[in-house]
Image (spheres, rainbow over the protein chains, first blue to last red):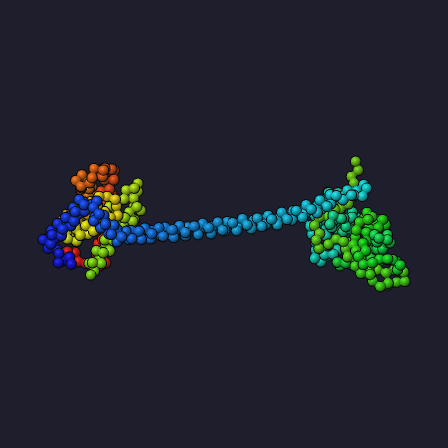
Length: 277
Length: 164
């Protein structure tokens, strides 16, 4: 095509033709004919720049989206970290609330005369001596003395837990009532009949010396007796779980469920003589 | 056929570059005149016939897509294409200095010509007003001319079209 028209005369002819067309457009640019032609040609020309624009905008949008995805991912990681932190704080708050509740229950306790209580936390428990002893975080320096009774709270009520057998500067060893070395004089709350509660290194206790005529029944509450040299009288110790057949002519025994949940020991109160003024 | 495809691609490349993508090369609102530089490339390398037709088509496209005086760009680009075409083979168009100088002259001519066309053909309410773009755009065109010539030559080589 080019070679055919490459001759100078053809070139001049084309130039004249094109120039005449241009001058016609310029002089008649407002006539309906030229306006119509312009509109018709715009239908042919316009789509390409528009498509190119859209291509550019799509590309820009694509890269913006990539950037957005990266930013969202970073936000997600940060929020996950924050969420873990808040979950930890939430657990911490629930724990503190529980502790607060337990401590409030202890505050309302009417202490026996001339005694004061030292609140302590259970800090150590050995699997080998699970029902035998625990360590608490108060010791000699805090006023804890040997043979001091240790109470634990259940639903706002104090319950016998054990007694202090060894003290250190800031800790003490507590023998639990379930320890085989423990023997506490108790009485049936309903009849005031006495018995001796003994530990078995087990979750359950054993009460002996219940008279054959006793009206003890399953679920009867046992409280500390005034005969106890360690515990103040009237502290709940446990509930009759099962009554055994008489093993002697005069007495029978019973299995006792401790009032304290020995698998949920947290704060305890050690009762010690009040300070002399 | 290859020549037809080459000119077809070149035409639409000019349209897209000038009317769609020029804004991405426009610091302070100053966009280069890609069509004019491409026209110089066509004129210097392909001759007057091809250049004046391409100039006319690009000019008509510009007039359609803009609100300028209809026919003004067509007239200017046709004349510029013809002018560049008659200089073909009289310059060493492969030299960057030649490309820059011819682009600069054409750019100045473009604005002078535009002012003249407005004086002659435009109604009174369409007065031509000079602005800073008229002074700076020729320099910008001269700056991009080597890149446009390089890309144009690469396209010519790709299509395997002989120089005339």
